[in-house]
Length: 88
Image 1 (cartoon, rainbow, N blue to C red):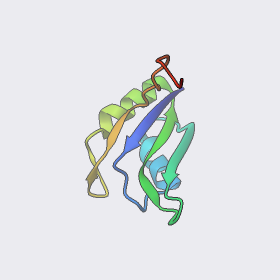
Image 2 (cartoon, helix red, strand yellow; image 1 turned 180 degrees about the vertical axis):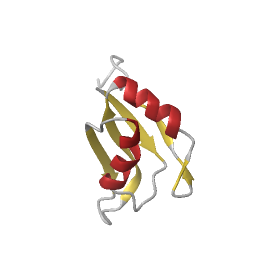
Image 3 (spheres, rainbow, N blue to C red; image 1 turned 90 degrees about the vertical axis):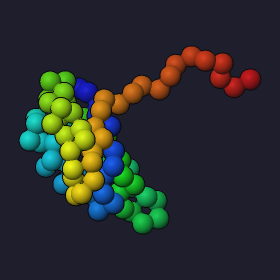
Image 4 (cartoon, rainbow, N blue to C red; image 1 turned 45 degrees about the horizontal axis):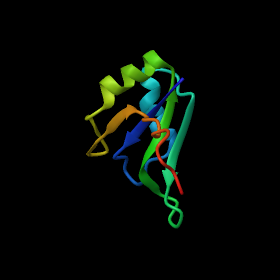
């Protein structure tokens, strides 16, 4: 399963609406929208889990396209850098 970063979502986006958007390209395995702690509204981004070929189809179709008047940013989630110096 691949995890996609989805950015530039409207504040009224819900898990149901984003799932409906991505399910056109395959089965949505998981979804996590990041919500504001005070208002409970979407902070404008989240993560969607899909199988590899379905995720690539969703990226090709949705990245840069308008959703509720805003251009979506859809890409594979980047792993956090490993190693480094850390705390001393």
